[in-house]
Image (cartoon, rainbow, N blue to C red; front, side, top):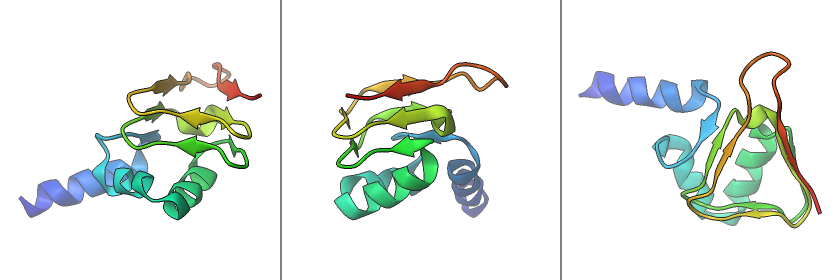
Length: 93
């Protein structure tokens, strides 16, 4: 069982995804200050007063930009292409 926990821990930090299926990073989405730290380090751009709520998904987050005052609500799914030269997303107001 310990091997499975270690494997899941490594998966959560190695894969470029945020969501409920990654519990070691997902818990940070419940607290305002940890949301900002996590999202500023993961997303291509994370705007001022932007929010990425718990239970939302972001796949290939390093190609996703969230502008100022953008809120990604629970159960929302953001996908960007993992391919080199593939498309990314930019949400701005």
